[in-house]
Image 1 (cartoon, rainbow over the protein chains, first blue to last red):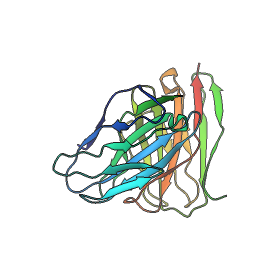
Image 2 (cartoon, rainbow over the protein chains, first blue to last red):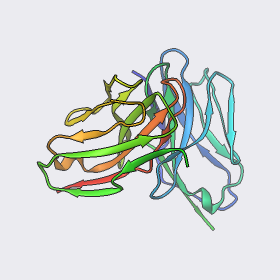
Image 3 (cartoon, helix red, strand yellow):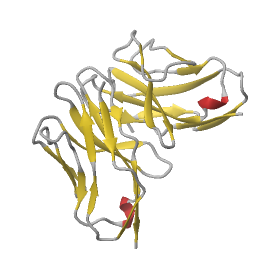
Length: 111
Length: 112
């Protein structure tokens, strides 16, 4: 079945550092890929998405590119802020099925 | 403000009791979902509904039931709660089964 694998956290970075959170997937067909963010005590919010190979999703300085050849959707940000501290979830969706999530990666950004 | 409303926000429940978690959306989304979130396990799908009047089982459906009598509401019922059902429960919805989902704020349930 479909699955998503994320790098395990927690990830601790200093403010203004470069962020990469790795995400790889296993799926049949051509799934859509998503990154969600969960701030402490809140629900999940859609951060960005890509619906086909080579698409780049971007939002709030975060980017991720749908790489079918490596089955990856790594999340990147050039300069993180303390306010980016949260848990990040990679997810995929195959046609007609519910979102399938990775286990989440906790990010802590220190001043 | 349009979105998903879950109730209650949190609850402590005695084992063996029956409990219904409520979920209402005002976005006229066709599809709705219930997930549970547990530390180290991420989010796991409990039940889903692709359209009013239909429901389906997810990854961890045992001990839970749902109904979808109309577009807006998707309650989740624990018939006889057990401590392993202690979790944070999230309701979500999407326009259709192929698009991104929007999440509620969650219900923190503790079964003692």
